[in-house]
Image (cartoon, helix red, strand yellow):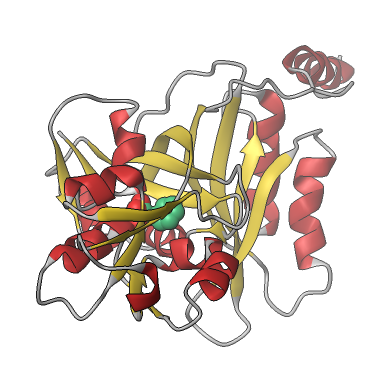
Length: 300
Ligand SMILES: O=C(O)C(=O)Cc1ccccc1
């Protein structure tokens, strides 16, 4: 069975529904969902990882870095549209307390400031959790910013829809399982990894980037995250275009292993958009093989 960052009605739940119609278990936090995968209670879990407006979801990136190895085996990208939902009867001018997930608040900041300037916005665990809370008659919160399905599910009234400041925003979710088997290469894949930087070393970040650049590997995301040991100590969470079975990617990983004190491989998996990377000259598998054969032949 799969788990997801819930409760029912979250955007993560919607993402999960695009890949599975079977029953799934909701968890109140990304940590709890991933912990259940680590403990073997679930086949996998769907969690948010990146938003086109807000960037990486730090709770997920941090959880993937910490603890027992987990691996991403699929990505799901969905459009996110938000609405403002209240208990039946509440009018817009009566909304004083808004509850929602931090990413939703950030994506609707301008609209909320303009349309409910009198309101205070409080962060909830999730958008659907906020809707469930607002649905309680005695709740101190007047409105939730959430998906339309969540508003409906918890019996709320829609005061406004598509209140996001950046129309067309998408969120990327990943299905995570125990590390071990890597999905087969499709030719349109992504690989996620975490590289730790050598400390007190000039050019350490450049050294990491070089490993990809010289092998023609394009990056689709790179974010620094604190290692949580000392102030100023960082690692990099990176998505690259390609699969572990692509020679250029495998060689880049070997290079990282030589120049970084620690590298975590977090999975190779098919891209949601099916886009194949443009592999520049000198970076195809055939060219890597031909080069290796040539070097092997030199000794006679
Ligand atoms: O709270 C939710 O519904 C989530 O799944 C997390 C989230 C919040 C805002 C945008 C995308 C995902």
